[in-house]
Length: 200
Image (tube, rainbow, N blue to C red; front, side):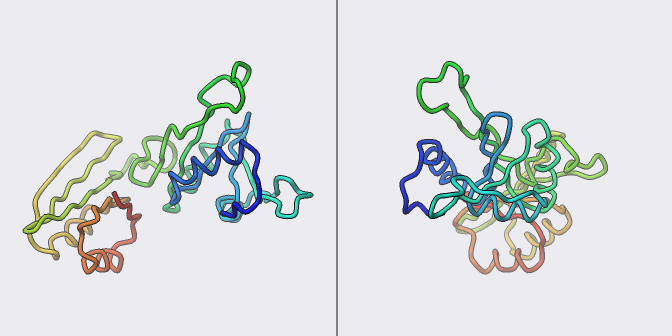
């Protein structure tokens, strides 16, 4: 995200929020729209077949942007999540009419394939598991949850092969890994499983 030039206070706010969610598309609320900027806009415009435009068209470095009406955003978000992406929803958390200066905004929801709770991304016929894996000196701690049903299970595994078998059988949508997981295990997981990896 280029930050060479001086930006408006709104864009500075955007950069600050986006820095906390670098691996998610940031749906940034501006009035009746969710706007996306820079790399997010370039990628989302292509993925969702949206019109790509720019902010400050006459500037030396116009800012790529695209957007969707807030009342229709759910369908667009579902499509991105179904494709394995994360979406951070950034809302105006104070009334623009009473705000002094910049309207305060913050991310109110992070939607990932494993945390989706509603919409077309959630199937009534199959579970939507979010799994987590941690490593200690002697074993792996493995847990999974379906947030839409409340189902939760946890177990201890001692062999790497058991991890692969558990995850393959589970068909989780997302796996959260701690930083202690050996690179060899992550490599095996990436080869055998087509799911979103998140690091804690």
